[in-house]
Amino acid sequence: MGNTRSSRPSGTANRERIEEDDHISEYGSDLDETSGEIRHRARKSEERSRTAPRNGAANGLKRQIPEWSESSDRNDNNYEEGEEYEHLLDPNLPDEETIELHRMDSGSLASFDDETASKAGEENSPYEEVRAAVRNYDEDLPCNTLRAWSIGLALVLVGASMNTLFSLRQPSIGLGALIAQIIAWPLGRAWEKVVPDRQIRIFGLGCDLNPGPFNIKEHSIIVVMASVSFSVAYATDIILAQLVFYKQNFGIIFQLVLTISTQSLGYGIAGMMRKFLVYPASMIWPGNLVAVALMNAMYEKHQAPDPSIIGGPVTNHQIGLNVLTEFVYGYIQPGRPLALMLFKTYGYITMAQALSFVSDLKFGHYMKIPPRTMFMAQVVATTFSCFIQIAVLNFALGNIEGVCELTQPQRFTCPGGRVFFSASVIWGLIGPSRVFSPGQIYSGLLTFFVVGAVAPIIFWFAARRWPRSGAKYLMAPLIFGGAGSIPPATPLNYLSWGVVGFVFQYVIKKTHFRWWSRLNYLTSAGLDLGLALGTLVIFFVFTLNEIEAPRWWGNDVVTGTMDYQGKAIQVVLPPGETFGPEVW
Image (cartoon, rainbow, N blue to C red; front, side, top):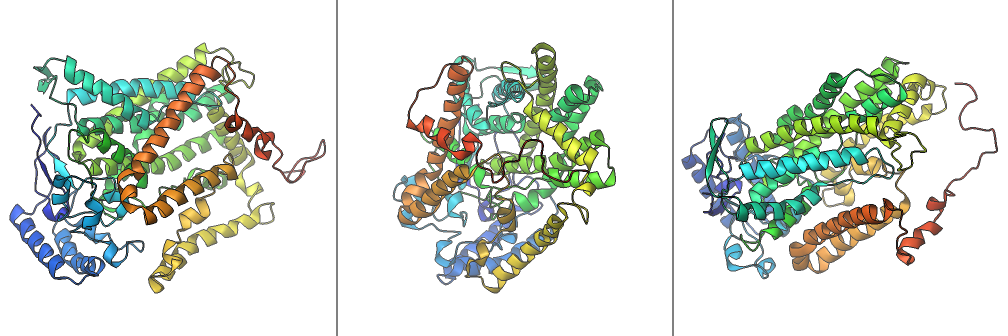
């Protein structure tokens, strides 16, 4: 069961209506149109692409948009045929010959096998980054299996508990979804070899103990479970601030309701945003491409190699609402620090979780995972992890001696809860009116509300007015939010990031495009994995055992910097003096 696999194109023009079961993706399951209508439009689209002039990719795309828009007017379901085309009016869309929606340059296929080359005539993404990482065909493989759920939930248990415990430590250590992606591979293959091939019944439903070879879709479901559950819930910092610093305990039920609700509210927004942030091809979600490329490489010997489908938000950068929510509530209800923490969490984490869930939906879209299976995996893993995190948090607070004290020997000083407490004092007790209102010390910063609101409009008009100029690369979120990690990040962090990005995403992409197409995202995955594994080894082997790490230039050079020595400041205050007004 599940051993047969057949590949088929997954682009819009070739997408079939397919039914939802354990073996077949369901992206077309909600369409009202008959397959005949879809084939008819596909033939018309292909005829246009063959008769269009050479610069026809961009121009042909604009000609197709009205037709696809008419199609979408007839469909109000979850996935609407042609939505990729509706939202492809991207000022950064590659120019003229660089886009080929229905054909790839044969030269870029030289390193691939004949089966992949034969797919060159099929619909593909207009974005080189997506073509380099994502396959443009689907395979009938089981994904909603007992094996995927068992391995996934086991990793949720390990990852959520470990990350919650070590979030109380400074410096912290954590497991990421990339680690889960690597660990799941040998676990899935071992299950495939050891577990007997027979059926059992769970809650009245029959399921296979061993549905055949461990496949890429099962693996993707496991990665999604890890992605939504490994990050420590934002609400745990509220609980820490209440229990440790405000000495308030509202009980375990309050903690569970708070954590589950804040972690889950984003799902509704994520579902509503699929049409705009998941299905359009211009929504690349660059962060997903590394995981997709690594996943495809891990299964390359069993399945046909790359190229790709559609993508998500283009900058891989998100701006949080946490400070804005504190600012707003500090004016609404000054002097209410606990209420401010709740308002901040619901106001910020709802958006942040929604974007995280949308990113996972895009990953599922790239991997051709049925949306209902994706949603179930996300919800179950999220809810399960909330129970785990609350249990681990309360266990740690009750059993680690001196926890959350600055002198705690193992450095379990609760940095997140401490920051949350400090923010509640600054924004709740002191309040923004004493800091930002007219006549106060930082009142001039309010002008940036106007600048931030106007800048995107100016950039948009500039890109429309001068489409071939550099104005199309101006993005307000990157300009105003790009340096948001400083502090604690330093110019050294940004410089190394900028150099690596420039070399791989510009120099190598321009001069060695075939190498870039094949290996760029695999190289990124390898660097990320090496860093993650190296961090774990250093922490558990050296740091926890108080063993001095090997001494060499790479380890010692940082100690000579002003940032490390705490000297990167302009003014040293004399004893007894402080910044800010003498009286608030």
